[in-house]
Length: 372
Image (cartoon, rainbow, N blue to C red; front, side):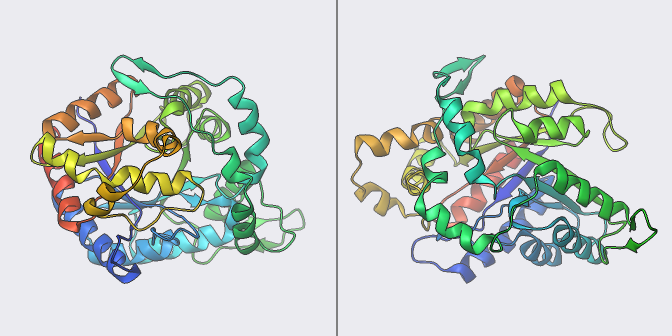
């Protein structure tokens, strides 16, 4: 059975462009995505990233809602370690009040990265090797532990957290969000508080995850839909969806597990053109994997002039190998493999190119080829 296609956007800057240009491109792409029949349009949350303008999902989603009519909009994902449950509920409650029934509140555990360093280091001791599962490449994992433990991450944390603040765990934040959405919240003495806007908002809450850890298991235990990141952490995608399904308990909002799986794609009229357009991607991933944050997306000429080291190639290998690049037929076949192997109920695709027209064309070609 065909599954819906949705889009994840970072509002990327490109070399020679600026933030204003990136945001205009996002608004244009969202309009075109709606016209092409995509199911959802999600935006990410990234901070201190020179090449990404989507630092505040709720603000950006409000602008997207104003220029679209019906496509579902959402966050992929609000980083719960940087905000209170109340601030998240108020932001998305305001959006729902203005554009009722259109928003997904996608949540992630990012913002608690330094607490994860020891766990990541332990996981590396039992690191898996590259393998192919029923046609789907599952690469060797990339280690984020050195980046999470870096001085740059520590510096960023000074601005992302209040001094002395200890972020709540995922379950505690979810408890707050669910209580505030159901509101009012009443204590044992009868005192009540109500999130305004927020209480009663018609939001679909999602969890996003890159492994079979807390996010996947919490989503299952609470009966929430789950988004698994093949494009960010391809090595862990099967582990993530398995942990979610194993943990799933039906809820009032969801009777059966619902999984959306992400993928990097680039579609052009033919395979050769797509491979040419794809050249800058590895340079861009290298900037992320080096711990400095994504640079503005390079041009093809800049990518061709880049001087690669063996270490550079090593740190981008999994992302390059698991990006689906080619003609509409080529990419559709690979996406069908991803859907079959993961059992995804929906696919979330993200595309990066230097030229906006190439990016729009990629999404349009894929939508036309994908079975309705």
